[in-house]
Image 1: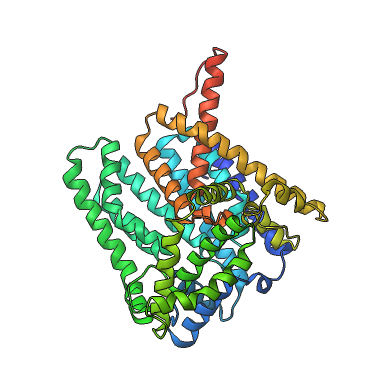
Image 2: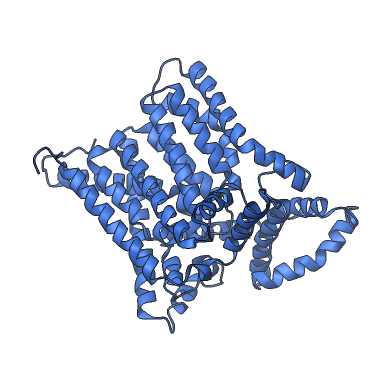
Length: 458
């Protein structure tokens, strides 16, 4: 058509990728079980908090961070009902923006490979499946990627606006998952280190000053929730004391289950029976629930890091494998009503490989195909990612390498023994970036080995 803008070759590729993504999301919306059936476990807490906001205008519990309930309540207020499919559609849009920010980052550092990174992030089965759940993970992943994007924008073009947006995204991310508040605290260090690796002049003064500004903005956004915690929990905390205590008891129960050749559920019950004596010895038998739970949290956390280091290391290694090697196919199976065992449960069994293979017994062929394909997808990308680390260092893309590795390590450490594929969702784009660098490195190696002309990606 005369006068129409021409779409460049890479633009056509992006349009095709987005079209495929739209078809996949539409198919899942049409084929998956009723949305109400998907509101189970953690999603029930988010829905309860959302209804509290709609009914009373405030959140009266502290089990989860407030931003996703605020988001969901706003959507329900606009559409006039609890239309979960609207939430899922908007989460599909959020995931698109996560992929688009990955594309923007790759255009700064490795432009010729940007479309591949965009496709890997957008069509990642783990992320697509999670976008159909009533959980904060998709929103959290978008905000985390936005923080990474603005930090790397600062590395490329230092300025106040970049660190301002960086701090704002960290503050909002801290309102979606509790551990993100720690990233706010290290914002000044992050800004200085990124500036150092980018070789910016006057880095210490300007970088530290801007980093402190990012911290102030992040805390200004996350601070009101801390005040709410003070009212509800009698202290400022990242998350509810009861939730934290139950979580850390579950982790210690896994240690006891491994030590005694038992199962987690039995050990949780045994530990619960021992708690009255623990509280009695601490003089807290008649204390408030908040004080009791806080004491039990400290008790279990201390025991985790002081007892059975070999068991701890073993469980931690299994959690890493489960978190980074599982493909997310179990979520899609759940959406399509062909469920299989969760990988974290498999990895915490005595023989993980036997547990994985046992999951295929009496399973539908579709479930087996989806599971194997998603696991293979994840494993291949993780292997490419190892090559990508070497390639990124060889290209001397130090700011990108620093940010990618730091965020991935942070997310890997924070969840201890619970290796669930959705926990890695915020770092999926970074893992895909590493994989793309791996592809680029292998391509360069191939050309050098066969003495072909080299094609640089950026």
